[in-house]
Image 1 (cartoon, rainbow, N blue to C red):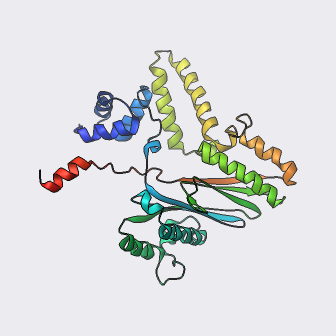
Image 2: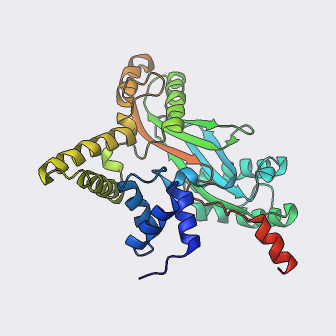
Image 3: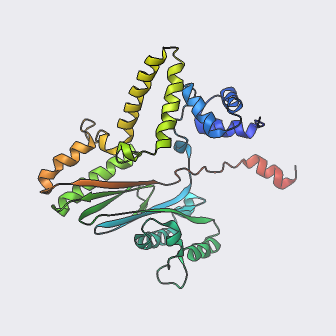
Length: 308
């Protein structure tokens, strides 16, 4: 069995908000596996954070750029928010976002692409900026959407500068209708995506492993009730239906009225757009999502420096 250390307990506690002894038990029961321990706490109703990404953090900026029927997102991380407010850093992220249009969602292609106005690649330019500013920076990820006809609409939440902020969204709408009306619809849908954070466009798009993980947690929760197996199965199916409804963009209730499913919002807009409208895809990029920020212990750092 893996040794359960104090640092493991601390990490699990920070990710879930559960009590120290509960975290220790969760790790013990799951042989030190952090992901399984998180699910164990959720199943027992002891976790205050259903998604560990809610505590994930990193500094930097998300950049967004659009060009007619295509658009791209990019995330560039820095160590501190101070650097993210630096005009030179902001200008760099904006340029990288423009280059991202041709990288079409491939971060390695983006890093290897030429940085505008220089003889360096994007990756080389970022490294040069690291030396200049004195803080580590990385091009973490990029996303891209394109439609043959229609519009790819962008939205930036918590905007720090034009096209730069904390949460960037792309919404792709395929249609031969009025582009201005499409963009109006797309902006509303993009704001919804920013707020509701759907996992996928349709139920079929949710990865099987994500659905199975949820099912396993619901199954364990239902068994805690002590009810018969046939009743447990019905309870789990009910919870899974709710999970899909709340996690899939097309079935989510539109945040602007909290009544109409997004699928109907798109359908109803066709009369104004003047043609059929297909919501072809979306991308949502939140700064620091999935990155754990290192928590510095200042007192320990001072002691270490002093040789205590």
